[in-house]
Length: 260
Image 1 (cartoon, rainbow, N blue to C red):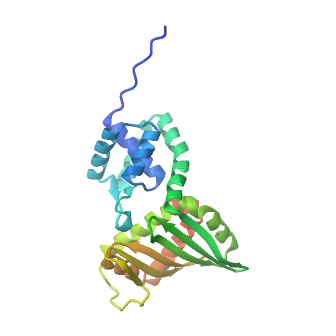
Image 2: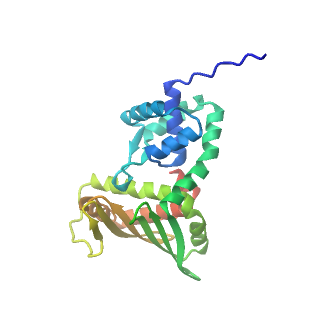
Image 3: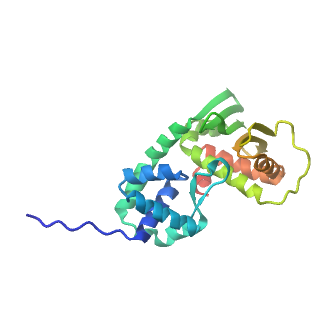
């Protein structure tokens, strides 16, 4: 009768690296979604995950987003540096398991979020698209996109759904940065710039135009201060070009934009 080797003992450091790898691969994820992914891949038990998650947040290697992403976990620059330096210590089977399972899991999350991409109109040199992400009764993100680029429009229709979480993460990152920036533009906002739905639901609207596309961005935020800060942060022409170009890359699944 063959003698079976005892299961390999996984250190706390390795478990923390496993969690970092999961969040980095998934893009952004809630703790509940992370637990579902971790247990499906048999990476660790629940208590271990919670303890390691607490330590990663305390060390600044993971952070939670702002606004409607208050429950979303994201890897920080410090966390990515830890993965770069120590990620090779993870067994290859763990890397393979996470990378193979992540795309299907992201698609399941997106189906639950009700992500939609549809043409409003499609004429030569004039393509208009509506891109929406719902996580409740109100759209969390709504993008009205206009472009002359047929190829860009086509890629966006086919790739927006799998890359929607990265678009959401990017926009809420901008909103969080805006809250900590000094207000340089005190001009009155346009009447439709802020829509109040409830005491904790405000949609901020801003237009940004880049080299390949123009967007009207609607973003759901938890208070008027955050909504106004987001709109004002996109009033600078230089910033709007940068944001529009980044959005064009993200909604169409551009490798360069997704890797940033």
